[in-house]
Image (tube, one colour):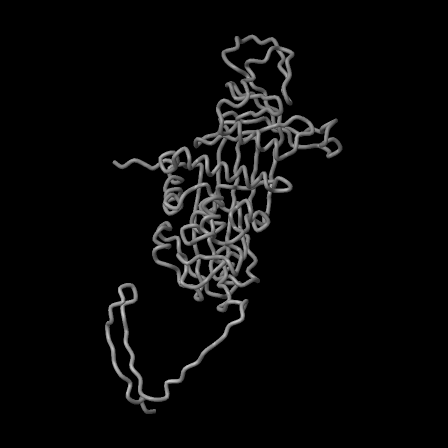
Length: 398
């Protein structure tokens, strides 16, 4: 009996760190944190683009993805295979090409089996097919491909990522109003409360982070920053806590009456003895959606040269010159009393570049006319070997 390829088998520690760092840099580069976003949804698309790019275009994409060319060629298929071993995670990748571009067979060979489809050129028909793919591969969480089909599209690369988990310890769901703070005046909100009986709360000077365990090997981490701390700084602390086991300190080290960011340690009487750490969590339900234009993040995502019609070089992707014209992501996330579910569909559209080079320099031209008998030859250019030679005595007659 064979063994499944797990995510940790498919990706080494450096690659996992590269994916996480892409998320960190991308979110840090934005003027405001999006309501929901997925750096992992972008990562394999950058790798796929890089394998089809050359020169500066490739270098920018690889630098943004944090991998080398060899890793990029293996990443999409390996990541898909690994995701199959994680029942709580669903991942799909696909490419659709129109009739105006001819994909390089070596490039498509690096893609997962059955990942390549066709565009008809009929915007409505193509939209229907791609929307159906997005819905099918996110279990209906996202029902549309985040592209403008009113613009010319010759090639689409897309990923669909979804996560679903049920809490190991459910929350109690109730209605409450906040009497102070930024949520005061909102009216009654859906409030969630539970007690986690494990060492799941860590604190630092600027932030506190609690880990809420779910099934299917999924955790959801919630991070609270001190008042006045910028959202990007809170996110940065949360990413640190999620990736560094040594971040902060355990709340079990706090004494009764001691406080940390959003944390207070108290004591109470019970008929049962305490057998381990207790973490009481008060939070809120949320359902969030976001539509992100990744073109605004071109520098962080390595898409600057790739999006330049004159400079983009995807010589190993298609026979015709193409460049990135749209890069978008739509995402959703739901945190409830019983679990968490989220999805992101990321799409990169490419268009065939104009078939001419804009004139930039003055030229001087010399002309010759073959209006009498002449000789010719053919040669092997690398070696200079002459293959055939002849003489043209007169032209062919019409």
